[in-house]
Image 1 (cartoon, rainbow, N blue to C red):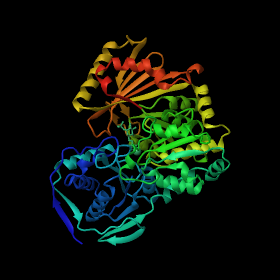
Image 2: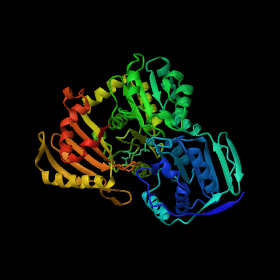
Image 3: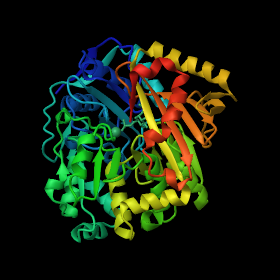
Image 4: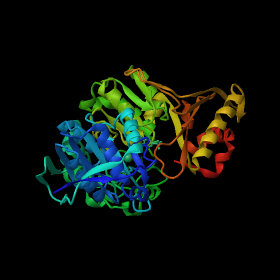
Length: 538
Ligand code: VG1
Ligand code: CO
């Protein structure tokens, strides 16, 4: 077996976004595109004598990419490479595995909730030894390396079968094909009371449908929901991972899984529906009556944390800036600090490492905790099942009594997609100018703009200041809007517009959120009239 040094030339578009390098699959299929990026990673983090774990969400190109990366890892002198069987490893399971076995780096092959297949997207995420996405400084160094890359190292003709558990050695590198489910399930058993949940289901106090949308969570759902809790197979949907997610959009939100929500509503014996995204770090929870707002989910997890032994002592909580301030309200009532960070899980990871927080979440259907350094979809489902097993109330009662106690923060996100990047920039610049001109004036519908400023994050741990993370607009009537550019889109730019308004009037609680927010949405869009033609609500 020979190590080859292959001459290459740089690509100019290898800058990672919110969560790794995400591009159209066809871009990744260009000559040496993947190899260049991986060598830039290995040049930055120097994998020689280090350990690496690799796996992904099962999308198209995963196995091919996995073989290239393992061949390059060996050629670059890795001490040991752990490969998930069939290449199947969820993002949170990767994080838990890295932490458990003190592995130096993790490569996760996924573009998360983005569509898969030849016409879809592919992506690479790099995590470090704490299990979290690598620090921005490392990502920036990798990008710098991609600009001047001239050659890469690769082992010629590696014979690799990842369909069976196995250990063997290639040159100086040990290879272990491992089961990507076992350690994850063990972690969940450590946190949650499996026998209470099993009993909840056996006594028919709660029946649910779960939808893996043909992403990676099916393999975890089968092991936990079916094998540990005896949930019938017919309650588990799309649990076989498929390269194109069976044509589904593996991004659970009320719009994309509308058919699944309809299906659950047609079954009187089914109480709840759950779904996860392709790489298993997002979750969605709904009943016949309500779709749980992720901003409420994290607030409720905090409120009921005392029901979970593992979370008896919550030291603090955190949310991303776009997420509604429902969490702040509960944290304040409990006397617990609440941190507000920019979008992207790496910011939570720093706070988790420093033991400043125990639970954290974002509006984009992601919640997580100290147990991992990534958000965790199946964990969130289990958290809800555990709460329901330990409490005397059903899901709707829990949600309604929480609104009655604290008030409800109505929240919605509007995505303005596929805009030419220069147009998106100019829309945001113009918005800032329009907003400044309207400051302290009524904009529309009795909404007065009371404050407008860029969100800057002051990292209390490192002293770093990260500027320009989005535009914050405050209005009277307890209304807020936050606007930023997405860092995960692969087709033009996406502007995300997050709208929220608080009410403690009980009569309001049952109103549809889009109806409740309609006038506020009109108001904000009157400050950026160009976007109306693109808008998509989540
Ligand atoms: C989106 C979400 C963000 C999330 C990120 C990664 O980023 O808004 O909350 O952390 O995706 O999630 P952006 O930059 O497009 O808004 V995932 O499930 O891709 O790993
Ligand atoms: Co994801």
